Length: 233
Image (tube, rainbow, N blue to C red; front, side, top):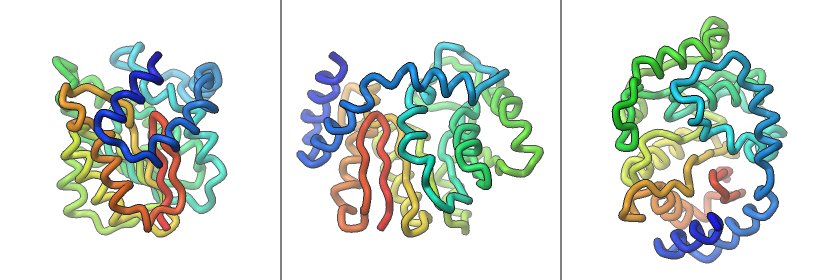
C-alpha cells in the first residue's frame, strides 16, 4: 500500500514521467530487501549507542546503498550533510576503507525533532565513531551546511545529503554539493519519500525533482528509490 501512497504523492507534485518510471523500476527489485538490510545492520553497528533504538531510518536502505555503491572506484573523499548519531558515516567508511569523511551537522535538530536531546545525540555520535575520529578518518564540523559550504575549498568523490529536510534547504544543499562534487562523482540524496509537511511541495522530493530536471544533461546515471543516487557527467 505504501507504494501506491508514495506514487500518488509523487504524481501530486507533478513528478516528471521519466522519474516516475525510474522509481517504479527500482521499487520492484528493492521491495523485499528488508531482511538483507537487517543482516548488514548487525554487521556494521555492533555496540552502537542510540537515543531511540526504534529510529533506524538509515538502516532500512543499507542493502540498496551497498548494492549500488560498493563497486565504485576511487572514492577517497566523502562529504555528509547531516550526521545524527553516525550510522551513515560508519557505513561509508566501512564500504570505502581508504576514504575520509567530512561530517557536517548542527546537532540541534530540525522541524521534526520536537524535544529531542541533541546533546545526548551528539555524544552518541562521538562514541559511535570514536575509532574513526582517533584514526583521523572523520572530520567533524558542528555548523550549518550553509556556513560549511561558504568556507569549504575541498572537492569530493561522494556526497550524502541528509540535513534539514525542508524543500528550500534541500535545494540549497543539493546545489552547493553539486558544485564541489568531482566529475564522475556520486550524489546520494536521502528521504525522497519523506512526507512530513502538509504542503507536499515543501518536502525533499519536490526539490530533488527540480534539480534532476534542471541538470539532466549533466547526469550520467540516475537511480530513484527511497533514496536517490545521481552520478555527475
